[in-house]
Length: 408
Image (cartoon, rainbow, N blue to C red; front, side):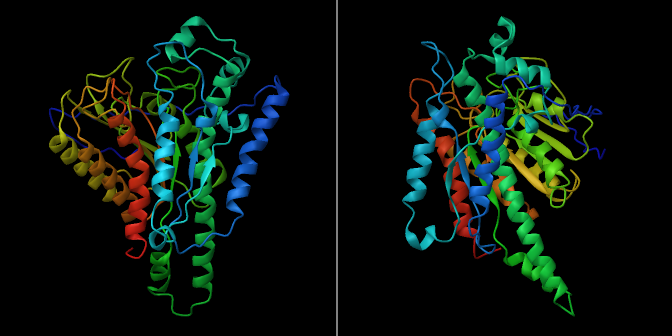
């Protein structure tokens, strides 16, 4: 494992060997439900992927799962409504883009499919998945996750993971098409020097988004912190399993206020996936884990320190200190916002916008696909700051593609 080096009072970097997750088969209980789950994601991907795709225009599919809203007890602290409210804002904003700009980016909104059991077991314990499907969990397990169990909660959890898998795999399908095009260019050139690189620079950037997900506190056989399954981990394992021709090394950039502890453990010992988590050092609600890179910042951190730190470490990634990278997942939690109820940091709306741009710049500079997920954001009495920060992540990604579609 390539080790990054750091010496600073505010940042702690730890490295451990990681253990691989086991890939096992799931039993056939609830066969009807499982069969519908298995078919839904494949049909969704085929519907979108078989449409005409222009390889030279940016591609930005957006998935959303707020159709699976789960009723919660009165005064529950989880902001379930935000998913619909954010999606509606993003959709309205993008649909209001002037036609002269709207035509520059290929963007379509699609309901998140339910993840397949076959995909889930790349990451999570079959027994855990089975008990969750059956509603056979202990009170402690339910308390740790923070949600009551119901059939609707199953659909929501499966769609929260399935949407991220769909968003990521769809980019890989387009990447395969781009790769085939470049191979065709190379095969038809006698003098290949520079021409393939030039052709590659003309291809459209590949971003995708899930207006949900970012459930980075789920472990192999348990959940916590409003996370049942790890959508990013499942998606990463699916890419390595099914798209090894275009994805061999994955980077997870987790900028939620909380450490991505579940993903840190799930990818211990997996050289193909690097975990990067920048979070508040006073906001652990369970045992701290070890990512490939853990960057801890103190409560009350403001834009200047946050952005300078992020700039430094993304530059290290850009220079290759994290190794090869073919795909980036961006956990874009906005609970670092000064207006967040749980975050304990003091980042402004402008600071979050600059954070987002830094990640977009990295994906562009490395010329790799980028999949954006939602992550945390907890309103106080006024929902507006959190809704704006969440929506701006997705709107900003679209605008970034518009601005850079002719300037690679």
